[in-house]
Image (cartoon, rainbow, N blue to C red; front, top):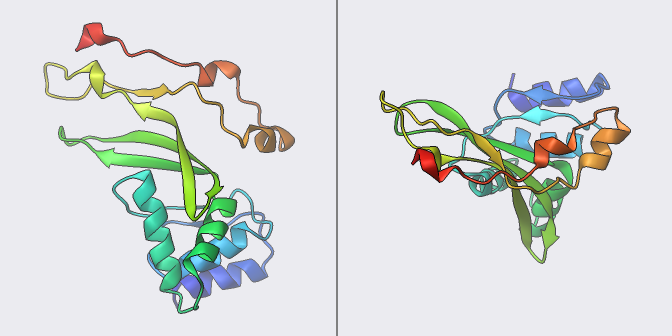
Length: 171
């Protein structure tokens, strides 16, 4: 039984959302189709080096589904289905940290536009044990999908998106 089979069978059960631990192939197409047909709140992981690379990986995996879809159609599905990329990196100190929270905004021509909402503060320096002191900091941009969250009863305080300057005294 493949992940694609599991996703398809899950769809037959009319779930509110689908969670797939990791997409690695053609199931990326099934997940996008599910997300674009009323299964908002679905979630999956993909291995990539950056938020932009994650989109390229999803695009490549959709092509692995064996459907002859034009790249623009795939990108349109991705831009409509996905709202957010949470990117985690393994830093040089060996720790894994969330380094970007990036909103997928829209299509501009053939390109999916992205906007960083939060980025890891590398400028906070390194502590005495060689570990990064940094944390996520807001870029000051409010995501376009906030009204969607509000419609579903999720309120996010404005302070969460307040722009934070970098404290260069720690460098």
